[in-house]
Amino acid sequence: MTKKVLAAFDKCKDSLAASELCKLTQKTLESRVGQYSVDIVPLSDGGEGFVEILTTVVSGELLPFSAADSLGKKKEILVGVCELNNLPLLAKDFLKLPDEGKIGIIEMASIVGLADLSVEERNAWKTCSKGVGEALAFCASLELDAILLGIGGSSTNDMGVGALKSLGLEPIDSTGQIISFPSPETWSSVSTIQTAGMTSLPPLTIACDVRNPLLGPMGATHQFGKQKGLDFDARDCMEGEMEKMLGVMGAMFPDVAISAKAEGSGAAGGIGFGLGLAYKVNFVPGFDLISSWCNLTSKIRNCEILITGEGRFDQTSMQGKAPFELIRQAHQLGKKTYVFAGSVEEETKKICEREYPNLEIYEFGNRGLTLEENLANASSHLISTLNKVMFPR
Image (tube, rainbow, N blue to C red):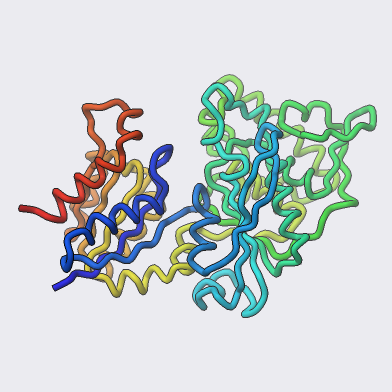
């Protein structure tokens, strides 16, 4: 009898997209006729793949748009536009959307993504979220009824000042000149800001799984600055410049101090914090969003086997990442579950397999190869591991 499988993968960073992992699994399992029937749901927590995944699921339209990348160079991106009457009722209820109208979908990672920069180019003093604001302004020009912004995978640490600049905020230096690209290295020149010409936005929802505040040891700079090119000594200096900039912004936005302490204000370099000063912003967990958007709980209930995975399965996976949330749901529904990850932390594997008896976790990377070799050969490694596990001799 054919077994119903749900394949729901997150991405393998710098290697395979979530959709590629799902399609490879589907093709491999269905290659032997009659054994498995595979439904696929690519996952995104708000980072890479966010626009394409959500837009495709509800037969939306992908619109090309030119926006500034994190260093100010123009690049082509895609913005999703979806009819609200095509969204599942669960998603509309979760996002508090009307029954009719349109929603725009923007992916921060596609505009100012960390993955777009070489290691040498990563420098949070020079990167800026200006392009994200350009995409938001573009959506506003389409007269949409709502905007959904995914903010994972960014290379910026500018508190959303760049995005606000594109939406009409004017950072002005002591000579009265407007600073056109307000990356953090320019902040010492900012003496005042003006907000009279700010663009109006429809209701804005931000998908984000990071709960860190803006400042402090658990804040944006100290927790995520290293990957964005800030060495340890530079982080204290950056934090100091952020505090000074907050003082300047406080003249126009009196809730600055309170907002900086809010849960999630440190996500993606603080862009949600900045946008939340000027607009009414609703933060939602990325997994809960995609679960409601794709009817994931119903799909798990209707399958016999769940297959999920990501690039690396470790302790951080257990902190709200999509594959782990799927494991928990599948356990509650009594479903057999497999995790296939490029690399697996042994202690996390032991903990999870002990807590969830119907779970098996497999590493498809080859520890005898370099990271670069594993990334280049991820497809063949996944196919080989799937065949060994799902078609035992």
